Image (cartoon, rainbow, N blue to C red; front, top):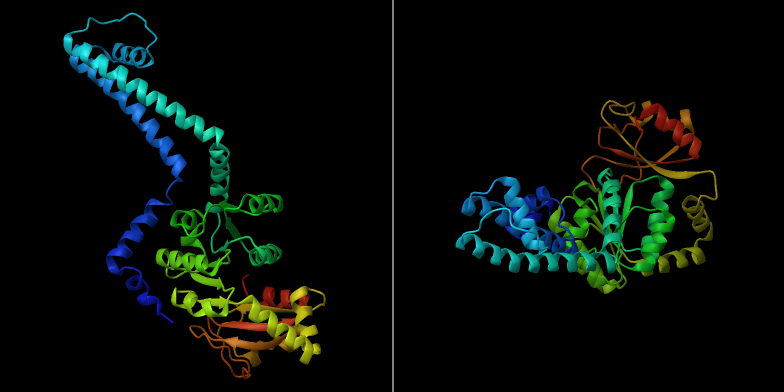
Length: 363
């Protein structure tokens, strides 16, 4: 796996990294239809400004008279002139009529297209969602609202974890709106869409769009913009798992592989399968939870024996991950010292786990 300190070089070196930082400071780019409308309005206002300044410089008109002459010239309403025009002033008027009518027509047509094609509704929709997403931090970006993305969003909503869904399919967007999930309408392979979804504040991106090829693009785009963000990619084909890892995915999930293992487990170890189903489905009064050890809480600096988690709360410590390590210690000894950044995997009833959290942590 590529080391994180190598990520900027892998996507273009220091110069590319600087460009990404500049892009980050500028924020997400507006969509194409919005850019066209902005250009049209800017062109029209430039013509107005040219006439406003031109009449003052050429004819010595006051600001109000210059603005009046500019407006009646561009709109071709035919009101009388309020200043005596010289030859240069008449030439300016001709230019203003041609440029003004052209820019005004282009602006009107662009604005009409913006409204008629639904871009205005999408723009208002984007603005509302943008304000909501701006408040998200350490959230998950779910790219694709298919079967995997839908179940993931449902589980995140149940857990109360912040997330935003990215999809460009109208039917799926309707489902997302009905479920009242925060979302971005757009192609998750495009940089500005991920930026609009709050990529630089996100703790993870899940690439679960329609094809493995698109998931590779989502992974490359996310890692190229924000190498530190965790990317979890869904692979439809086992053959593409390696490609997704090479693209930068931190984890690759193949539902078909997991499904096959799950069926085999049900057939060969049904009791274990029922136990795991109970934990995952909420059908029993026990759960698996992560308990992070933070600086200043009741776990930091203590051993498992001193914490007496099972004796005090009835929760079992199944595993311990020390800070900076990927491997889980599935047989933690009683003398294991807990330090900030460590993570405990515990099992117990929801009430017992909640009581333990309140006693030891600041969550």
